Image 1: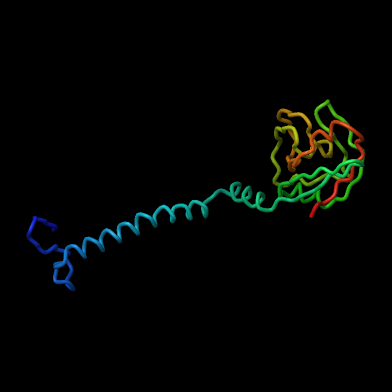
Image 2: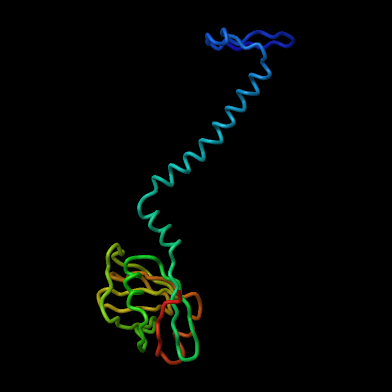
Length: 185
C-alpha cells in the first residue's frame, strides 16, 4: 500500500517481516526503487541482443564468419596486378588450394572471362545457383570453370559465388588475357 499526501509521511507497506512492513524514509526508498527499475530496463535490451546473437540462424553466423575471414588474391597480368577479395567458403578454400594458377582467360558471351581449373571444386554448402554483377568472381560447377564477370549477368543454376574484384575491372576487357592468379597473403 502506497499513500502519499503533501506534508505527511505515512509508512509504505512492503509486506516484509524484516522491515516490519514499513519504510520510514520515502525519498531514499523511491530513489533506490527508481535506480533498480532503471538497471532492469537497460539490462533487458542487452540481454535480448545477446540472446538474439546466440540464437542466430546458422546461415547468419556463417555469413558473419565468412566476412571476418576474407581471403585476398591477385591476378597478375603482364602490365598490371588486380587484387580481389574472396569469401570464406568450402568452394573458395578449394580454389585457393590450387593457387598459383597460370592460364589464358577466354571471353565468353561478351560478359565474362573464363578459365578451366585443373580439377573441379567442391560444391559443399554452395547455393544451387546465383546472379552476378560486374566484378564478381564465381565458379561454374557444371563446366568446372572459373568466371570473372565484366558485365552483370542474371541467375544461373550451378554458379557459385567466390568473391569480388577490388578494382581494375577494365583490365579484364582490354589487353592480353594471360594471367597468373596467386594468393596475396
